[in-house]
Image (tube, rainbow, N blue to C red; front, side, top):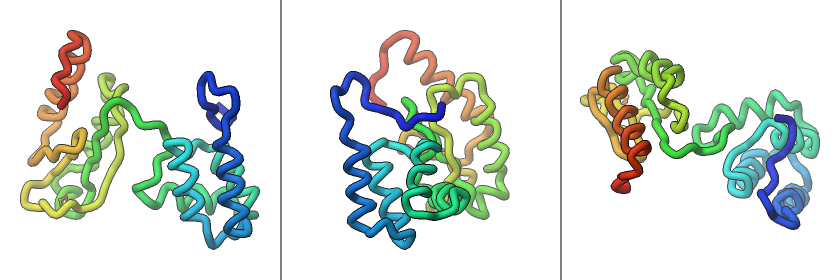
Amino acid sequence: MDEIPQTAGAAHDEREQILDRAMARHHNSGDALIEILHTAQQLYGYLPAPLLKKIARRLMLPPSRVLGVATFYHLFRLEPLRKHSAVVCLGTACYEAGGTELLEGLRQHPGSGDWSVASGRCVGSCGLAPIVICDGRAMARVTADKLEARLREDHDRGSTGTDAGH
Ligand code: FES
């Protein structure tokens, strides 16, 4: 996909103009890159590649620099949010307790299509490592089996239409 997403059905998508104005307000300065990425994500919900390229052109920055900043900060998303989110802590304790394997397992799991999967930094519960935050709730001492069960639970709930809202 090579286009900046448009609002479905909207007669006129104003997001591009709002972003243009935000960049103009910052005199199209590369120094304002993080603020501009924030604005772009607020407008679009995430930062698709064509949008990053446009920002790079406008701020006269190398596209690799803009992509580098967008991927360095965990608060920026390069993909749209899905129905569920899982953030695998990769702080030292969680990393050593198998966080990377959990992250890879989640990303490759055939049942994770509804999940936005990301890594995060230490959340301060190192004694319970590894930690995975699923839909805002911390799971402690996570194993591949526990994650598997969590994915299955949501899949079953979705297929029976009995989501209790948590
Ligand atoms: S390293 Fe994961 S909670 Fe601290």
